[in-house]
Length: 121
Image (cartoon, rainbow, N blue to C red; front, side, top):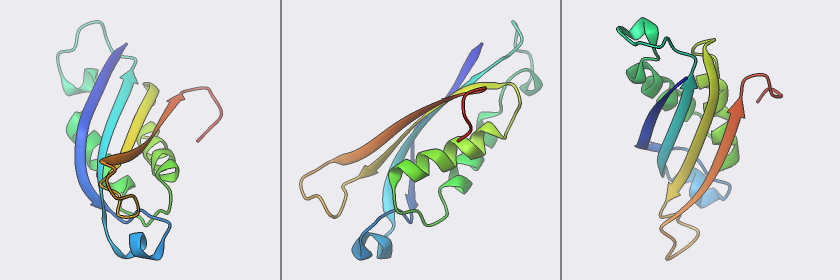
C-alpha cells in the first residue's frame, strides 16, 4: 500500500449556510490522503496515482455551491474514489479559514474517512 497526500490545498469555494456566507467565497484548506494498492516498486505514474490529476479532481469537486463542510467532504470522497479502482482508502480534512460568522476563530473543519467496500458515500 502507498499513501499519496495533498496537504493544505488552498482555494476559494462557494460554501456556507447563511446568506452572507453564500454570497462570499469561503477560503478553504484541504488535506486529502489516498491509500492506493500499488506495486512494490514504483517506476512510473502507471504504478501509482498521479498527484497532479488528484489535485485537479479535488479542485473540480469543490467548485459547486455547497452549504455544509460535511457535504464538501462527501463530494471530495465521491470524486476521488472514482479516479482509480486501486484506491483502497481516502481521508479528507476540510477547513474553512476565518469563517465570517465566527469572529476570532481561525478555522472550522470536518474530517471524514472512507474505505473501499464500506457503504458508499
